[in-house]
Length: 202
Image (tube, rainbow, N blue to C red; front, side, top):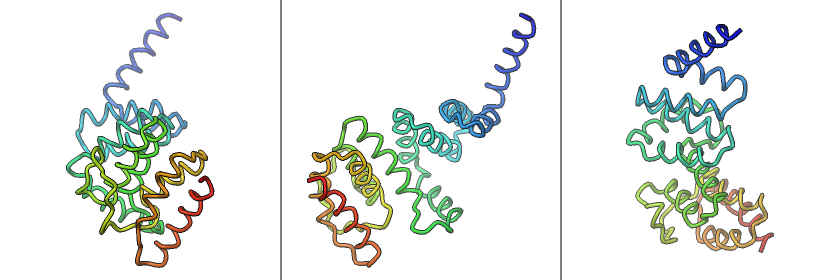
């Protein structure tokens, strides 16, 4: 029995270090995204491929573990190839209306940071998603000339705040979002819906 267990451990170790992508796939199929993140991370350490880093970020979101979400989503948005990768993913997911991979990843990071207790930085993530020239760590609240597309990262953060019925955070977000003036009808409707949800908490 001990020999069988020892052989199984050796086989598992070989698979873990030699074929982390395969084990990541197995964990994903089983719904164990916490382990999937670890294997995806190991795979990324071998390849340095942004697609593997994106897999870490996406599995971290599915795992529901905020420390993983913050770590890997932040690494992803800070990668030099992130904008190019977002364009590729948006093309792959073109059938999803108003979907932006950039806004999705930033939005997940913003929500995780907010759940960790740092609303200011969470807003910074949302703002940086809308304008890459902004610094999430030093966002001043100036939103002049920033567009407000449907399903953006700040909107995702607002929905998280609404869902948690956080009146204090709602007040701050309401003041910020109230400064946007979208030109498109769909964007205005989206913004007004968010403002209505936040206003109900004030």
